[in-house]
Image (cartoon, rainbow, N blue to C red; front, side, top):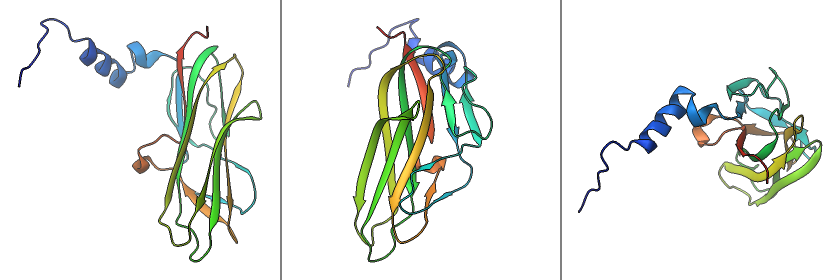
Length: 171
């Protein structure tokens, strides 16, 4: 094979270093929060998740032990949330829903019917949306079983629990 080397041009490496060090692009408005414990979700009840761990917040968008993040910089934002539902109760088909609300109004949601005896179910949802200063982003979940169902907010799923990333000014 042929290798391409551009002497003196380490832009990609510099950007990666900036991200790791919290400077450059990483200093753009961004917030990622998680919950350090599994949350029990009551059947047929739309539930707002309470976050207790701030992973990164470059724009003071998160208040400790809050259910939401508040946008502090207007513009185009990438919102994403995800988690891992526990395996469904044996022999029972179930419905799972996750959604992102902006100012109490559903912005995007994802629903999945889960077959009986399935393994645990990872779900995520995302949207790119124009937001104003003081818009509030909330992550809510819903499930239908005969009882409470756990949803885990752990980093081993490879997804953030709730994240907002500023992409730039809205056009």
